[in-house]
Image (tube, rainbow, N blue to C red):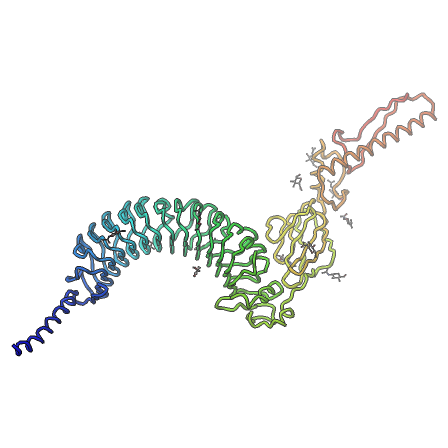
Length: 602
Ligand SMILES: *[C@@H]1O[C@H](CO)[C@@H](O)[C@H](O)[C@H]1NC(C)=O
Ligand SMILES: *[C@@H]1O[C@H](CO)[C@@H](O)[C@H](O)[C@H]1NC(C)=O
Ligand SMILES: *[C@@H]1O[C@H](CO)[C@@H](O)[C@H](O)[C@H]1NC(C)=O
Ligand SMILES: *[C@@H]1O[C@H](CO)[C@@H](O)[C@H](O)[C@H]1NC(C)=O
Ligand SMILES: *[C@@H]1O[C@H](CO)[C@@H](O)[C@H](O)[C@H]1NC(C)=O
Ligand SMILES: *[C@@H]1O[C@H](CO)[C@@H](O)[C@H](O)[C@H]1NC(C)=O
Ligand SMILES: *[C@@H]1O[C@H](CO)[C@@H](O)[C@H](O)[C@H]1NC(C)=O
Ligand SMILES: *[C@@H]1O[C@H](CO)[C@@H](O)[C@H](O)[C@H]1NC(C)=O
Ligand SMILES: *[C@@H]1O[C@H](CO)[C@@H](O)[C@H](O)[C@H]1NC(C)=O
Ligand SMILES: *[C@@H]1O[C@H](CO)[C@@H](O)[C@H](O)[C@H]1NC(C)=O
Ligand SMILES: *[C@@H]1O[C@H](CO)[C@@H](O)[C@H](O)[C@H]1NC(C)=O
Ligand SMILES: *[C@@H]1O[C@H](CO)[C@@H](O)[C@H](O)[C@H]1NC(C)=O
């Protein structure tokens, strides 16, 4: 007995080992199983099909990177406890409807990186507890109606990297719990507005690497819960219509790597809850003043790697919570304090990678450089010469007012200029000024129009300050004022422009008379410089001509009266001929050769 007892001990041990092995034996060959987490990992094992011997109680099944070609109905029916199934990186071309039958516990399913061309109706039935589905990186061309209908609990759907050309209007029907959708790298040519409108609980929408060139007005309908919208890498997107984002109540918006050339002020109206805005890598050249006032809660604004030349004063007016501004890698020369509503609240300002001119406009920032974070890279001055390449943090407090200065503009040309041109010619009035920062030049015309280099047309200002007038007209004559201004002050200069008329003045003036050829006046008899002639002037001069004429008549009348008194009373009929002065503007009713009056003497 004792002997057998001694012999039994190893046997018992063996049996114990056997029981232990029993659970490991249930693991498919080449796979790794963990009894504790109930997982079976068959990653990269060259399996041609779903292996035999998967324990029935398996929760996590990883079959990624194998050579599985097809999924057939009930392939997984024997494993009702599977919660996570990873089939990514296989060569699955077709999934039969019913393939995932009975997988009521399934939470996460990945079919990423396979060769699926079409997902037919019924593939996902019974997956009512699925929360994550990834079908990205396949060859799906179309998403058909109702294909996700039973996925009532799906929260995340990845549809990227397919050859999608069309998403059917009801493709997303039933996805009532969907919170996050990624649509990227596919051949869509327009936003699938109708399909998306079924996703009433969608919170974030990521649309990346799409070749969509236009975003139509009202592109996003009924997305009441959407808070995060990402539009990234749409190289053909050149503008954002005013109503493109209408109806959305976003907190995060990013429209990056696009061809946008103007800041989409209008489209961003009615987004008072927006806190994060990323417009990096576009072609926006300027942020204009006072147009972002509606973004009252904006905290972070990123405009990195755009083509920003200027941020105008009051650009961020109304943005009192702005904490972070990223304008790195642009073409900004400066960023004045006056662009911010609350510069003291600014915590991070990334402004490196700009050709900064370190003058008094940047003084506020240099003084604040301990209180503000510049991000990973310190900004540097590119001019003036003495400060080139000098990182901000190397400015000594005491030397700031020495280095960082501004000087008032001083116009180089002489105080007063007289320019005389013939009508129809081209006139150029020059005005250039020195000063730090470089003064901007504007002109005020005799008619009090303010012109800057932004105005285009017959009369325009060049970037160097010269005013160009093409095909000068008589009414262009007058005094022009050049104003050179910068933050330190301004300087002005006057230029009078005299325009020699070439007869067109005459032609235009005589259009009020019956016969323009009546007067013998040659245009050279007219004053050779005329300042602004209008109807009023013509009427006044006509009236004056009439007065002069009446005066002469009266004078003659008086003379004749005196003469008649002296010479007796035998003549009582006298003819008086009056020829109006040449060049006068009178006569609207008279004809050519003067006027004849018959004065009867009593
Ligand atoms: C599916 O989810 C529901 C609740 O969402 C739950 O009551 C049910 O037990 C889940 N079914 C399985 C098999 O996990
Ligand atoms: C999608 O676009 C790619 C690249 O432009 C092209 O090779 C492919 O044929 C397109 N697919 C479809 C279905 O149009
Ligand atoms: C971006 O816009 C510019 C100017 O409108 C145009 O020349 C260029 O081709 C556009 N780029 C793309 C990728 O559409
Ligand atoms: C917009 O979103 C904010 C916060 O995300 C929320 O407080 C507000 O009620 C929403 N407004 C509307 C009209 O849905
Ligand atoms: C903003 O967009 C750029 C360009 O896509 C990206 O590199 C950057 O990470 C984005 N920043 C944030 C905070 O999302
Ligand atoms: C300014 O006036 C001076 C004489 O007063 C003259 O010598 C000089 O050439 C003028 N300069 C210009 C730019 O007209
Ligand atoms: C300013 O630029 C215009 C056009 O480029 C040129 O015609 C003009 O001569 C320039 N003026 C001066 C003073 O350099
Ligand atoms: C020029 O400066 C004066 C004060 O120095 C100011 O009153 C005036 O408005 C400025 N003019 C322009 C056009 O900036
Ligand atoms: C004559 O006046 C008209 C408008 O009153 C104007 O359009 C026209 O250019 C003028 N003719 C010439 C030669 O200036
Ligand atoms: C005025 O004279 C010109 C030639 O000098 C002639 O062609 C034109 O017809 C005349 N106009 C009138 C209204 O007589
Ligand atoms: C005006 O006078 C000039 C010379 O002074 C002459 O050549 C021209 O023909 C005259 N024009 C008319 C319309 O008489
Ligand atoms: C135009 O008037 C100026 C002075 O006002 C005079 O010097 C000039 O000789 C005149 N030109 C002609 C063509 O009469």
